[in-house]
Length: 157
Image (tube, rainbow, N blue to C red; front, side, top):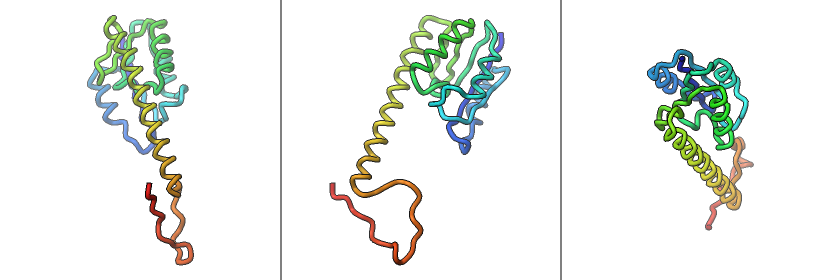
């Protein structure tokens, strides 16, 4: 029985050291780290970690959101692990799928994580729409020249 750790950061600029430290402290024999968005279902290091697992192993992650961003993907991952007789241990959320209460926690926390992500996306889209209505657009700022300069528009909404 081995503990196989998996961590993920969303961008190349982020540092996965805190996840690596937590996985090492949890006694992981092997650790796989991805630098990719959680929205992507297929990630190279996640695939390697899943291929490395054997029946009786424990798949360790720091948070549910590190493994997936959608409840569907989390449920697919859980089913795949269950079929292969591998338990899931989520360190920060105290989830251990080797117990019935751990499996219940997994499903509840997975649903909460997806809900929170959708709230963040919804708020971001509302903010962008509001900014566009005030004449502001995103992207790289134009270079400053005397002919291109003007006072920024004020939105009175």
